[in-house]
Length: 121
Image 1 (spheres, rainbow, N blue to C red):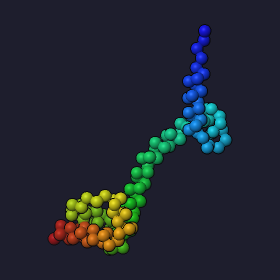
Image 2 (image 1 turned 135 degrees about the vertical axis):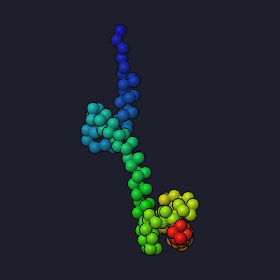
Image 3 (image 1 turned 135 degrees about the horizontal axis):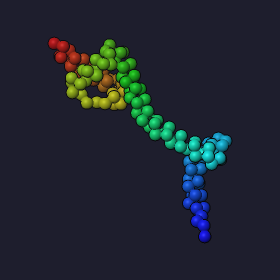
Image 4 (image 1 turned 60 degrees about the vertical axis):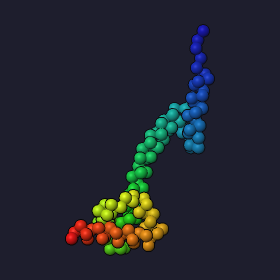
């Protein structure tokens, strides 16, 4: 009597086909192509979950830099001043404050500038 893998194989195939649902052409219908497509899509998803973190950090830094330039301060000086003032706000929060609460951001810039001047003196 031979062993048949029908049920397990079909279940595995169905799972992979479900993951490729919505793909165009052979990428959603042909078994070998679907396997390749799903494998690559998982690899891209893994890679891009990490890239997203880098992209957002770069965006926050750009926003903070723009807000600082308006107030006559460079980003590096601002961050150095915050470190000297022991202000532990992260870049995401600083970016949100720069956009939505400019008055609060002005106060933070003043604190950073004061700390830089104090350290220079």
